[in-house]
Image (cartoon, rainbow, N blue to C red; front, side):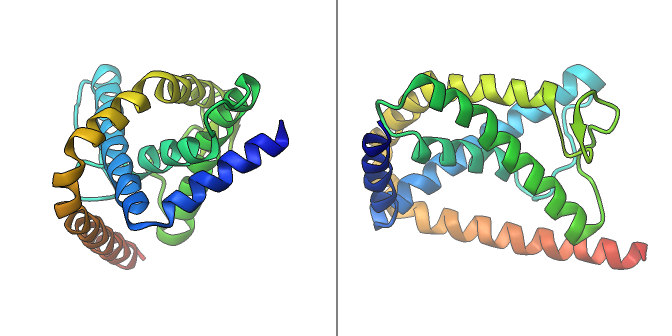
Amino acid sequence: MTHIWLKGLELQLVEVLTIEGAAAMLFYFTIYSFLGWLLENSYNYFTRRVFFKENFLFGPFKPMYGIAPVLLVYFTPPGSHWAYVLLLSFLIPTLVEYLSGAMLVKLFQRKWWDYSDTPFQVNGHICLPFSICWGFLSLVCIKWLHPAIVSIYGGIEPFWALIWSVVGLYFLADLVLAIRKHSLQEIAGA
């Protein structure tokens, strides 16, 4: 089984290294980052009655929600054993959330979320209840959502081929401006 997994993983990673693979990956990242922004703001609305939750970036995108599904898609080749998919569905989003939280605190001395009051948490960056939620959402993503998004991508791929580099530059500009904004806030707060 390990041999089959490695072969499938190797084929998927080679695909990412092509222009077409990079374009597809950026499309998936964009869609999942936007869906994550909607999910997080909807959750904020239902728990706090305010739709807009402060975002690291300026645009309506949450990169953690884009990175985790893309990693899941590329690390779970077709035909992967269900236990392996289940394990990755729990681990990848949890690791992405922990590393993102730790990195944001390290770079900007600020927490955009804090699970300190939640049971089974680690440094306020992750907690077991949300990791279980991420695992469930990841399974839904791999099983039902991603195949639909692949189908949508197949329909708009010629158009996406024309604009994907502009979308990539948008994300780069948004990231640079966000880093500048939060760095200046850190200096002003010091």
